[in-house]
Length: 198
Image (cartoon, rainbow, N blue to C red):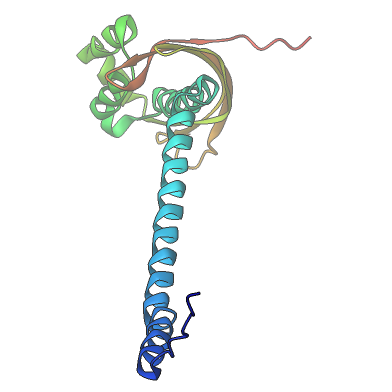
């Protein structure tokens, strides 16, 4: 019969084991915890960035949003162009005609750039200062390259030949056809629309 002899554990070895366990659960564990926290933060930041990129990508390709942005741009540029077309200072007719040509295209631009010297002199001799302001406007139709806008316009006219007279205000309604040229919307046609009183 073999007898089992219990070997006493050396106190030094026991201390070493306990010391090792304390070391593992002390600074090393803290370092491991901080490392995990850092990785968690990095992972969270990466997820936020990825979701942001996805949302931007999705919004950029949303046809409804793209159409709304196009209509907003058309409306802004159409208002500016229509106001320009209804503005002229007799003291700088050439600059006014140049401004008209910069916001137009096609046949309309050809007509404006073809204003003769006699016509320019007539405009200067009338001594009128016209200032256009779009009171209201709406996009009726728009796609990537063409658009139709209607606008209610107030034109204030000052008569420099009669400086004591009050400025007159004319109210007109226009229909405008626009074309996108070189990233800008330009007037291809601008026609006055009769206002129905019935």
